Image 1 (cartoon, rainbow, N blue to C red):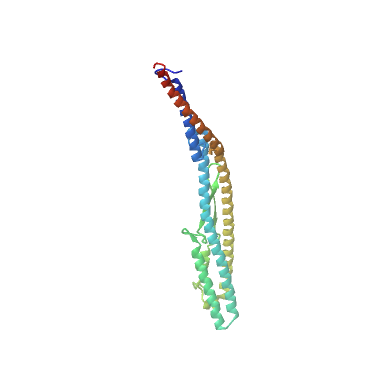
Image 2 (cartoon, rainbow, N blue to C red):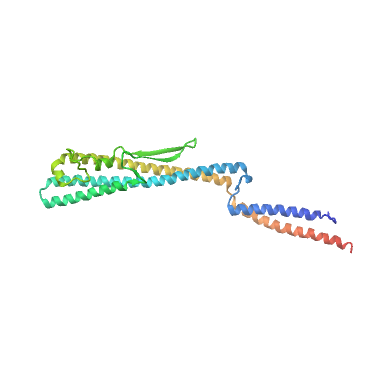
Amino acid sequence: MYGITTNYASTAALRNLQSINAQLDKTQTRIASGLRIASAKDGAAAWSAATTVRAEVSKYDAIRDGLGYFKAAADTASTAAQSIVDALNTIKQGVANYQATSDTDEQAAIMSSISGAQATIKAALAASKTDGKDWLSNAAAISFNVGVNSAGAFVTDGFTTAVDLDDTLTNVDATGGGSGKFITNFLAADITASASSLNTALDTAIGDATTIAVGLGAMAERIDSHSTFLKTISDIKNSALSSLVDANMEEESTKLSALQVQQSLATQALQISNASSQNILRLFQ
C-alpha cells in the first residue's frame, strides 16, 4: 500500500534489509572468530558449560607445565646420581688398585684418577640442586601436582630420598677413628691407614646412590605417565569444547553467500519501494 505520508512497502523492505544485515553481521562474526557461542547471549547454557571446560583445561595445562619442570629436575638429579655411582665405582676400583701395587708412580696415577672421581662427585652433587631444593638430600621432600580429583582439589605425587647422599659422601667419616676424612676428600695416606673403613663407606655410598638413581628414574617415568594422561584428558575436553562453541565453517560460509545475495535483493527492493512515491506524484501532474 502506498500513501502520501507513509510508504508501507518501503517500511517492510527496510525491516527486511535490517534483518538480513543483522544475520549477515552475526555470520561474519562467527566466521571471523570461529565461534558459534562467543558469549552468554549466544546461548547461556552452552556458554556456561564451555566456561567450565575452559577452566578445567587451563588447570590441566598448568599442571602439565609444572610436570615439565619437575621432569627436567628429576632427569638432572637422576643423571647426577648415576654419575656419582660411576665415580664411586671408579674410586672403589682405585682403592683396590692402590693397595695392590707398591710402585709409587702407579700409586700417584691412581690417586690422580681418584681425585678426578672425587671432583666429579662434588660437581654432580652441586648440579642436582634445582630451584634451591637438594634432590639428593634426605631433607628434600619433592612433591608436585599430577591431577585433580572429583572435588576439584589437586592430587600430588612426589619423591623423598631414602638416604642423605650428600651427607654420606661429604660429611660422614669414611676412614674411621674420627679423622674427618670423607669419600670426597680422603688422601693416599687414608687408604694405607684405614682401607677397610674406606671400602665399607664406599660400598654403603654405592648402594645409596644406586637406590636414589633408580628412585629418581622411576619418578621421571611417573611424571611422563601423568603428563601423557593429562594431555589425553585435555584433548578430550577440548574436543567437547569444540562441539559446544565452534562454528561450522562450511555452513557459515554457505550462509554468508546466501545472505549477501539476499542483501543485494533487499537493497534493490527498498530502492524500488522508495521510487514508488515519485510515481504517485506523477498522477497529479
